[in-house]
Image 1 (cartoon, rainbow over the protein chains, first blue to last red):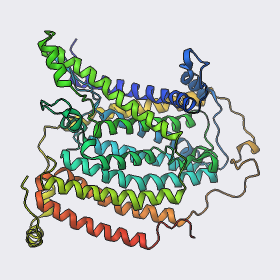
Image 2 (image 1 turned 60 degrees about the vertical axis):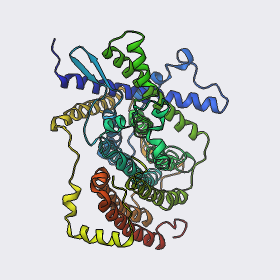
Image 3 (image 1 turned 90 degrees about the horizontal axis):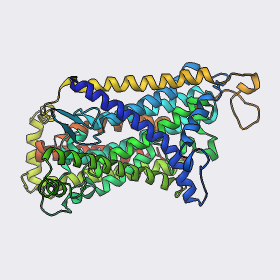
Image 4 (image 1 turned 120 degrees about the vertical axis):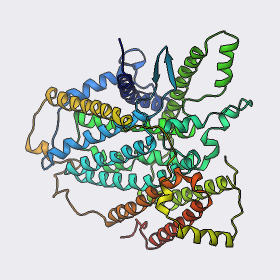
Length: 364
Length: 155
């Protein structure tokens, strides 16, 4: 059967979609297991071996819970809020280059759902749309806690978006492209010195930009220490106080998918994407000593790169959860002061520094 | 890249050249690549999938869950005491100021994207232009901070 390229791409989009949902589901499990580990507890262990079926049980529970509409809520917007949050969260994962090309005879499969030349801008646009879901839902609930959570979320996300965008600009100045795939390929080195591979990753050239970016990623995904929109000690549940059943579930899933996408973007932009150290040596060794064909060797490298990228993503997700159980929450004025008076000037300084270093030829 | 020294006279001379040249034309030097409009088609597939999942979740949870309501139960949650008034109340003007400042700054950041992508092509001229731009940006930024947009603990 002849498969047109668009069908292959559609298949990859489908797989990426499924994988991001799966990772979001199992992030809820991982969060509880890691919390239990850090607090010296047992954690979920009843549903299935090691509690691995817990996310399924949670999903069934969320689906069968009562759907609640508070009196005085704007019903249409109340439903629209979580839908928007989830749709925007699900839209952003497909542009991430999860791997290089797999070559089977005539067919070449790109392990990336959508390859567009404005990939980074697309992710950024989708992530910024996500805040509308929270804002609409919080306002529509007609609850004071929800309203406070919603305006906090809006104000916080837009403040940190500026610093995030500025941190990103320094990377774009070096790469000269917005395509995530090309940014990945630029972080490869063919130099004979093997550890050069790691020194070619953007995090080595943009350490300050990376720190700004990861702090903003925490704020953008509403994770501790910046989880003021939903801080349970002040605002009950923040913007999702009045939500129940799957509408609540969609908000929770959207947050975990955003964490996954943020981790993937950081791995691609700063940690070399699907490149891993010694990949050129390994390919040469497979071809010369093991007698494999170049195409087969390249496929093996591609699969290892895919595994490597997911290892990077999972490390970032673990970092997000580790920080949650380590740092206390900021106060709101501290949060705004950090965003505006520290991160934004630092990011502008970083742009100036990068520009100067490129102009004077220090960074190639 | 030309590692030219950027002295004060040199910078002034360059600035004059820059003011005469057409900045918009400079910013449109996009790197050549064979991207097609059809590359954007899978976004529709992705959008359809996302929409289908959300619709499925909403409809199934609407059909499966029980529905029992009463006046007390439907009241908005205020920690167990009786709900007072409406939640559509005016909010602190600080949030509004933040939103206004965001709009201004986000537009500035958007201006920087094409500049950053074409940074090498624009060379020293582009760098000097952006230093000036950032200077004006930071001047306005210092002004709003001085005016107390971040003094959250005061009224």
